[in-house]
Length: 306
Image (cartoon, rainbow, N blue to C red; front, side, top):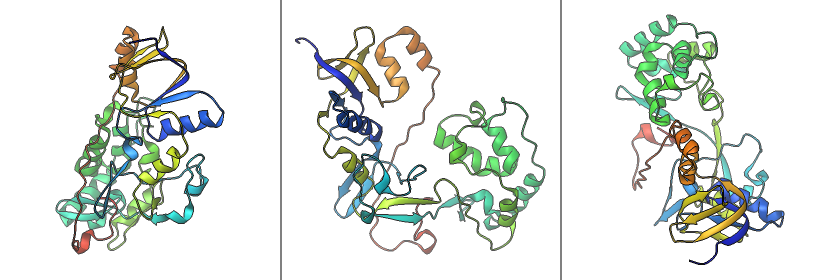
């Protein structure tokens, strides 16, 4: 097999985090090698073009919290004239009806019997338990009532996070979940008032053409030493080596990992890390992309997320 190839830095994973790490290393003139197991870089932010359709691997929109526009993102080589900022339009499908999202701020759109139960439950909602032991489940029920929690908020969030909500802290995913707002809830109970509060993804940026993969293309531009089809199967922390399924072995002084933490721990074969990784949870998404030719039903037109 020969001696391991020596690299100052190894970057594991060619998603947007790995590509950004590679760009910084290259800018600082540091020797590195990026290893990506798939045939192309980009991770879950890739786009596949089939005919006139662009299929994103998952539902990636560009929600910017630190930068004003795509062109401001470091290392990404993006041009603002190739992107458009969009006000999100999303819906929930509940009890056979398409309800404006977030559902908790548009209760009046529910069927009358469900609406009545949700209002009564909201009025009787318990207080959030004191202390740090309060869970994300407590946070939802105390914020919006048990009826709406059971109807939609618990099953939807448990699908997304792939874990029971009573296993998560009340602080979990707060950035991604609208905080309880008494005024907005009461407004949403009023007939004919649709409420879409400003939150982290009320607006998003998206390419005018080509899908979210345009972000990956920008990050990838000009990066040397990106090796694809390199599935890393072992990381030796003592010898500072990584081994790929293709039998390539590389030495490193510094290791940057953007692969799932539990996978990295298991690759090390370190008993303590392997035990610790068993306590980690993660969610997985299977994405089915469907291209539709022809008009959509009126209630589905112009919707970004359902």
